Length: 121
Image (cartoon, rainbow, N blue to C red):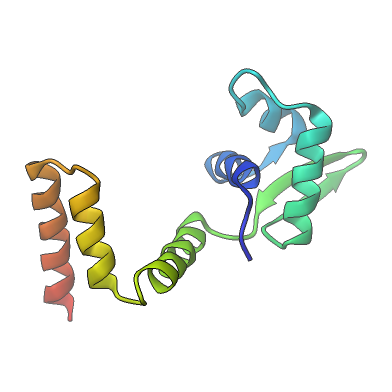
């Protein structure tokens, strides 16, 4: 299952804070801040989708992620490769390196990362 853009924004806050009450979440948003009801709706949807859960303390809830950021984005990128690049990581890499205007230093860093992974195989 996937998150909407606004849910991803809120999820990024939760990943960064690890656990948060509603006030902490609202405080973390840049201006203009969303309405409390909007954040409450997003939290409900994300709970229903099993991305987050909460502990109740009286009338307050402390929210925390159930899905790790790395796992979410790994699944997201793999879906992107499957759907848009014919399930070919090399087609994706070719597109990524040509269309993102990476500097020579960034390309060299990517090459080092790939070389390390090759050594592990």
